[in-house]
Amino acid sequence: MKTSITTLLLCLNFFTILAQQSDYLQVEKTVSYYLDGGTNNDFEMLKKAFHETATMKFIRNGEYREVNALEFFKKAVKPGPKQNRKTHISYINVTGNVASAKLQIDYETFSFIDYMNLIKIDGEWKVVSKIFYRK
View 1 (tube, rainbow, N blue to C red):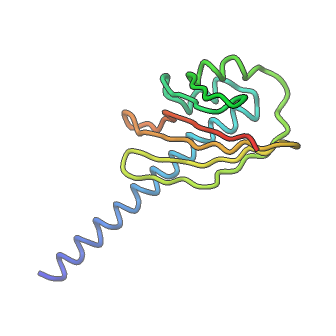
View 2 (view 1 turned 120 degrees about the vertical axis):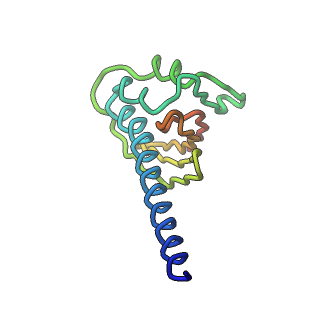
């Protein structure tokens, strides 16, 4: 009896770990759409990362701003040569059907630090909010 319970618990733990790894990889793929889309000036790729009502919040000229992320990027991302920048995923944290990610985008003279909040909607991870800091 003890062996059966122990085996069952080990199996459940194993499947939980597999599900978490799968979600981690899916979140990584989602934020990569954002990073790669921006690097390659590909709005259609970038758009895959965001929910249609995703917000982007930031401080510009000392004032708080809040915009629809897709509307902002539709204006900002224009076809052209690849951006000269390096991107890095600092961390991804997944808990159930929510996740957060910290990203860094380094240009020659400045960097962006992005914090993304994601939710798993209908089996698909989407960024629902982004805040960032330019350093």
